Image 1 (cartoon, rainbow, N blue to C red):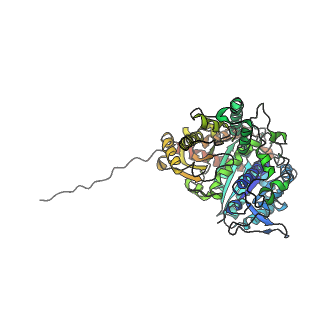
Image 2 (tube, one colour):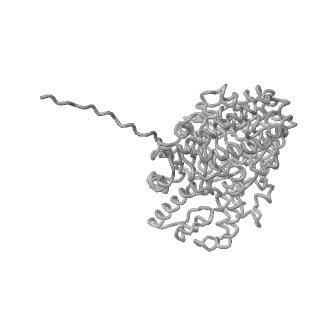
Length: 577
């Protein structure tokens, strides 16, 4: 049965990440569905429509053997400045959307949560809900809403939380996920502490699951991998006997992980990074050449156009009009692909979206999940000295699998998978600035993607047994606080990848930073008059109280101890003679 997900992109940052997400989703599905059939996996994110009718006729999945006529994304695009959405619609992905799927304005929210939440939200409420309703009615089994937005500006935080509140009221039975970008400490939006605090308080009440992504963490991830790839680029051509053309192709195929800049104020759209025509990328016939067993030439060009390195090296993607933060957007977009892989593809252990909330959220408000992935940047992962030479070569060459003998291949696979598990629990791979291993885990979910021959449940059990002893799991969930998933379809260009989602008390540090930055402005009354024009001053106090309660709840579990054991009463049995 199809299990659909509706993506809602709000604000400049949300639409930039969404643009990268749709590009990567098309590549992934075209790789595993070269015949161009509209099957259950493809229907999770896309409609299949026949444009010979007016309005276009939506074609059902049926038995999964029908050919693609024309693909449309299951998405709603919202931005109070039309620049990014307009560029997306003009670019190679524009034909994935029609005019009924996007809502834009001209002036923007002015980096003001109150303006977005109290003015633009009610003003466009009917249009937004109508677009959502139209998408929902085209679903057979709607799994969840997935919102992409940032919390630093006005539209992503204000309009985004307003839309989430409306979804909470209109679709209470559908799971609501938020992938939100938290601003960095040196963010160029001076009011971002207000916006972030007000948005987090709303998300705590109206979402089922929040996946925070810190801007600063993405910057450091891409910076670290860029410097490591630059320093090791000269040795990559000799390890494992791989020539430069193979490396370029491997890096391009693995380029779904990527650098960039997130934020409402980030530079303008990501839709025109390549020179492909719309029909070559977005239409059903372009992405899936009917009856063909290979990708169209335009996608081959795109997959082989990336050259490793960012500092001191120029990628052909950027020379073709790409933005320098495309790869950072790619990291966030890849999180969504890995999160939904079990919904879209088969596997020996599938994990639905509702299972994530069921297993990882012990209390209603404590639904902020810390995420990490490995590898983070395909084509830029540094070789590991612990691997044998052949496996080290594959790690250096974008994790593209070389040929092994059967015994060495099995050993290399096992060691490489062990490294993936070690990396996702490292602070360097976290998508927020935190170290989960130094805090208490409430629950943990792991999804391993790879072919059934290279990734098995025994690999997962072996690594969980190896790692769990050094993790501080909350007493009432130890040692069985792990939810595992195994998907048989790896990411494009990679032999395997691992996603870790954990409900961890370290997220309270992120909230504390938001509170501290908010307090510095609030106690001086700075910029408050811009907000009180649209909202009651008491809303600040209410939101602050919600945030403080959230911090206190996580910190109380950080040091939670099992209750003392009460000795049982033993009856005294007297014997009578």
